[in-house]
Image 1 (cartoon, helix red, strand yellow):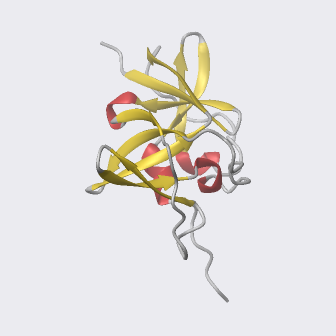
Image 2 (cartoon, rainbow, N blue to C red):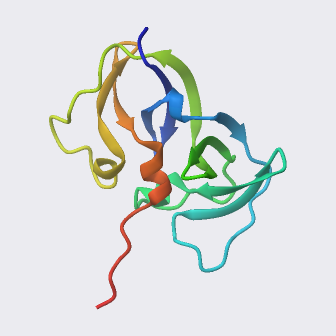
Length: 145
């Protein structure tokens, strides 16, 4: 059986995640900011009596932050004993991969090169194959000179 992929949209791009690494797809109802948190941490939210650290996927890519009024649709990712919600613009579908991931033939673009491990075919379309844990890690921290 082919690997299942969760297809989501981030920063206007369709991206494939390994469905086996995604616990759930949710719409968050509230977001509490965390003062002093890393720039890619959007805040905290609750899901079924659990606190989730919410990751702004656009900020993790070092793009402009998501607009404050946008819907809070997210993929829930367990990582390192904690549970995270990675904000996405939309979740499109869960589909079977058309093959194994392949390496990039050209740079994917700013931020994407760090979170995507290659390309994968799904439903006749070639998509970025992303590691959800790379979004959680966020961009490298700047070293103060």
